[in-house]
Figure 1: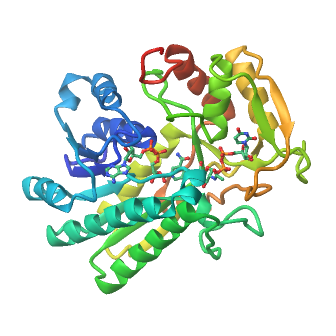
Figure 2: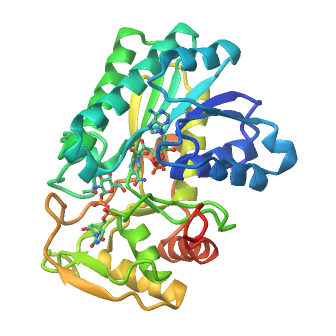
Length: 352
Ligand code: NAD
Ligand code: UD1
């Protein structure tokens, strides 16, 4: 991908988080100026410092970090009044499914109010280009696979409902004012890390998601992986997902920006970001064992409530309209995840 930026200025909310850090690095490398807004609720400033170090002294001059909660509209408005943004990439949000079931109001409060504030200020300051982090969760339990963007949408839990509502809000914002250009990116299962091993996913507490869990077993922080479900109608009985390398995802955001900057009247449009390939839990474990040389002990357990049998993306629309496709396979995802895990087994924290 050649450099596309003319030095445009992009506000990246949640830019200190897992997908945010990887995307910010790619944005800087493409010549964008980046302002991160993050409240560090699920991240640390050290992650932003690592991005600066990876970008180098010249490019990191184009990176600014603001410790702000998006629900604090006054503080957010100050940023908008000081900098003219050409586009916003909106990653910020809470994302743990189980927690959202236990604390639905916290999820609605954080994810909805943050986004409404953002749209209001973007409108007020004349920045009407938005890339929004949606999720494959909006396909619910898909009746058919691969998932195609025009499938009916369904939410399975409060987290998923925030994504569904925010997609609907985006469509309404555009309907009311067609000057808006909004791209909704539906991520499948982001995994892996930057090839340097300096940045990666660092969940707080016991991970809910498969790859961070496997990673913590590999470094000895957890003793075995519970494999949820071994009687699914799949090749080996375990559930199938579409895992995507976080660097491919980061590049998907650059492609989305390119589209926003180059297409008049794009409207409000959704794209899947996945590889189009399904991998089972047991295949993922085997690939990680191969990449790390570590044995991952497993325990076969009953299915996790609410889990779908097999989910993977149709990648045609993103390929055709964004000119983007994933480059990396499972082997590279596991290689880079292990590189990060072996360098920083406790993530950004010091070993306790
Ligand atoms: P993450 O938790 O690592 O990053 C989100 C960032 O947003 C964090 O740094 C957090 O501190 C910040 N944040 C949360 N609420 C905020 C607020 N009110 N104000 C300011 N900052 C706030 O998560 P991630 O994995 O990087 O995910 C980014 C986005 O992508 C999220 O919206 C998530 O729902 C979505 N998504 C993630 C996945 C995944 O598996 N990682 C899959 C699909 C969609
Ligand atoms: C999860 C979220 C979903 C989000 C998606 C994006 C849930 C219920 N859903 O989906 O909202 O959009 O991440 O990344 O959390 N598994 C195990 N053992 C574990 C952990 C997971 O066997 O310890 C299995 C799961 O049963 C599943 C697969 O691994 O079959 C992937 O799980 P996970 O990483 O949690 O992702 P999803 O369930 O696809």
